[in-house]
Image (cartoon, rainbow, N blue to C red; front, top):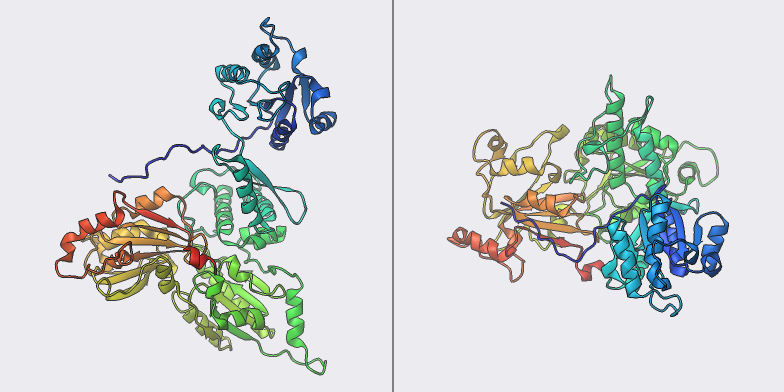
Length: 613
């Protein structure tokens, strides 16, 4: 049975509460109480502040909000008590108990007048705070007591509400950080660091995706809620599930499900800048399979500028437009520093129109001048052929208008990039494209994961294949050779089928393999977003890789699989002995040394030295 990761205590269960029409009771009326009140108001909560001295003793912000009708402030001394205690602090718990009973329900309680540094007249003692905590627990009301974490049921994270740069108003996106009580000021600093690195379009992207999501769920019969795996937030481990195409006789339910899958794909792949700039017309066009988006990523006048540039002559006379050109260029594995000089030149100095694959990251698209129109393919699972045709037709149409078209592909255009199909299509329509090679992820991906595809003593050769054939068909995979590395592109979404084909001894799955079955203990690496700052590498064996992927969360496309003993070559002290005579008898010992007591390992991010590039 698989050994799943052991939980490490000390963390918080991070939740986002919906407090609409719920009552939030705050004890205390200082600056911290005002901050808690503002957070609760933004969550649409009914806020009641209870403090000694009431409105007159409250801070300026709370008094202003009370005057605006945003919250209520009550004098703790004026409230009735269920006890006759003579000490003010001793009777506070009883006062609150009576108030909660009479109020008809309180959802959360926050005590702020225990904050360190308060004056002796206003500072609440631990004994008084403990009584209030016990009262809340007896009533099953979650409570937070400032500076006394042992009495708290919940804590406040250092949070930030992201602003929509286009409108200047708050977006639905909130960023929050917690150190679990180990450093509140540090949490605030880390929050600022994170927020400062978010693109300015982030807030607008969330707003527009929300509108797109609502449009996707809408039907002529009203709004239909989608649940389970049809919901774009269902947490399915891989987003590369095929998107069904619109069909004759499609029901409203089927239509909503198809559209929600489009939302998931767009949210996963398209740059934030593009998402933030979505128009209602573009949303409707995309969701109804009426064509991919055709607007510029930046300057909306870019196309007009490009056409005017293409049509003008040195004498300013009206002449026939110059003949356009088409470039097929590779963007490399993802990091913009891996663009070749030729590719960067085509993007920055030659292009009038860029037709980009969906997996080209925003960092690469960012090198394109804002005057150049950029279109992003809708080449999602289940729509690849249709989107491919759209892009080729768009390239020919633009070239006929005299534009220079750059067809931007991930990795190298000729390595599972359909370059051959496009070359023949463009040639048949009168254009001989210029093919510009790119750094292929076949080699770069394993290298960034510290896996040499060939290595003396570990791998004498390597073979590259795809996990999915034309129109989604299964392909034949190569058989097992201990001295060979197998690199599989586009296979993560079909990982169970790939593993079955590789390991099955006989029968139908074995017929999809040319050669010997792979031992279950063969090392495998799943490399995601190679060369990017959020690169992740999951290493395990064929036997346990599915459980590993399920355990570490959602897949991060694009991903690739590397299978073979060379994966151990550069791990720790390295292992160059797997091809020695009799080495296979020590494989279990070798795996034990490699993985330790675990069944898989996960490495997040790039090396510090590479990250500086």
